Image (cartoon, rainbow, N blue to C red; front, side):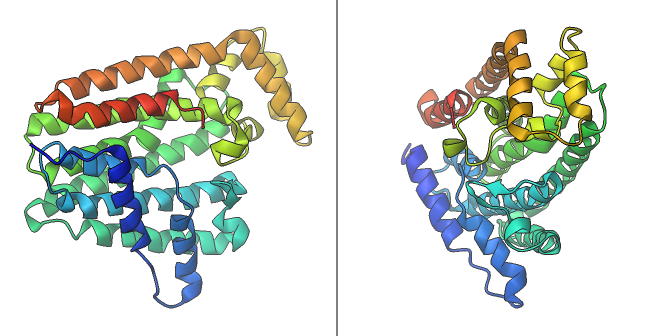
Length: 325
């Protein structure tokens, strides 16, 4: 059974499709920021997953294009609003929408982007429209819950590791699971396979977000696409910070930095990173990343198609947890 698309071929399809999405409606001031954020690029992991899941069962992956585009437009909508809430000034090395335009523009253009995501999703084959819309809507709601937890955690000093993992499951992992399951769904996959692919996405998403949080501290800002240390500066409760706060030798020093209203940014980043280094938290985080990666590939291994058709997904999962950018 062929053709089997490579990741490069899948990404070419995704990027071509995204370039074909141009919002020319008026007022231009509402839609120009949407075109802008979609033009910034990115890994395009989520739409690629939808197409790869479809390709497990079909030679022709056109049926999954609406899912891929809907998921990617939705993902970028969440980034637009997340950047505003986090007061981030860069996204993929470029000014964020609220910096380039205004806070109000980021809010309203984000709202319009959410609607456009649903319009893309609604292009799927009518046979699958109801289950696709249902899962997409549940996922969208879960992502909002994850973002709310993330914001609430910034004000709490007693966040636990299980709470953190549930937050990133909702904020990040469910959209990967959704993309995979819906890609398989429109290809007519069996229910058991769809569940396994969803679970593959959940575990891969947990590993991916843990890695992202790790790179926010230890990544190269020139290749990471945004400044490192942002999570430290806004006291975001990541796996690293939650573990550090639980250590009695580090708690007081961390509290002093967290409570400071005025500080030198580079000094704070260096001081908190030094605590993480002393406690060996980078290695501890990498161990958990590997654990979720192992769970993800175990789920993928059980999907009832030949191993050669799953090679691209196996390789992508490995690349995501080994990336340094």
